[in-house]
Image (cartoon, rainbow, N blue to C red; front, side, top):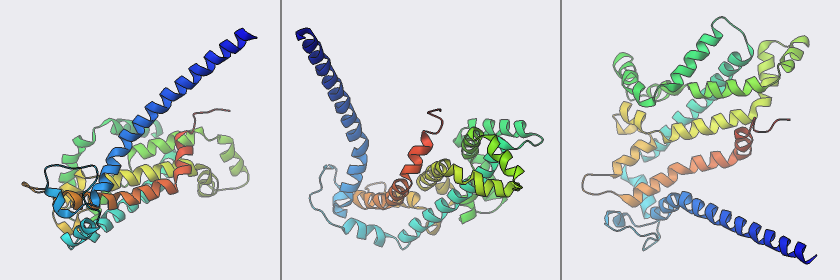
Length: 287
């Protein structure tokens, strides 16, 4: 009995030590991950004049909303930047969820001439680096189609992405074909099968696509920077660069704008968090 207690005590001590080390590592990782967000938010409450200082403190000398006021008064298009980002991100998100899901279903459950060939082209397109396509895409949109400084120029290149089609296809492949066959026996047409059966079963993957697409489009900088010359059509990410100059940077107002631009992402993620967590674990457990 004494040997058992001694062994049990050692095992319990090892377990507590292991759990303590894991918790410590997770806390350190969490602090490192959350520190940029903390610094962004805390810096946004500093005075606008504090931005030009050479030393940046973790806690501003004074807390005020002057930087937020400075951000909106700095340019007459400050509200327009946020609106532009929301319009572009919302349209691209809805378009990707709609068209990518339909294309993914077609690749997964329908058989048509050239199905495997077109899916192979899709995989090849996914392997092409994003930066490689920017020059020919810019020539097409700006020089050929003459769409510079317009919403179509910002939206068209990402109306449907290869990754979302691939993601939807992989999910729909995991759905049993017997459901579709049973629906056909009951007299359902293909559109009815998609909207009444497939889509309700695909809320998780659609939520994942919506979150990832919205976040990616909201945060994108390079493409809007290329096709938007006027300040009126800039998105929020491009508009923030207007607070940086050769000799100084309005750091606190820039952080205020970054904090404002991060709010829609936080709201979207936490509102769809349940579906997102279910979606990223699809296929992880069988049975």
